[in-house]
Image (cartoon, rainbow, N blue to C red; front, side, top):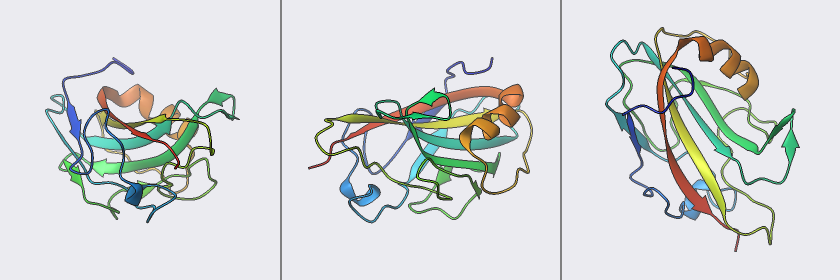
Length: 158
């Protein structure tokens, strides 16, 4: 079932599906991760990971299109929410070259970008080291992926 959408629901109290991400959660604001909640994980879920990706970014990174803003993994199955600026989980490396969350910051004049926040449900717990890039995390997680879904927010620099 790798990379197939599931009935899992992902939401944020900071913005709704297709809505603008508040500046607080961007590189122009406090640059903190937004709060997220999810429900209806597939039966057999033993862990989660969260990713934020901008497919509208004009850069080609590491052989793939877009820009990775957040990679968070090693979340136990009991996790169904992340508070704002969460300390839960293990932080991976974003495409800013930093560990943890790096909020939306599209190039000036580039227009509206979409930001995909993904929650991935896994059939086993993980214990991956801090600082992995998205490609390595997905290589480790894909064989254990049993469901996923997304919340898409937008942002445009002023």
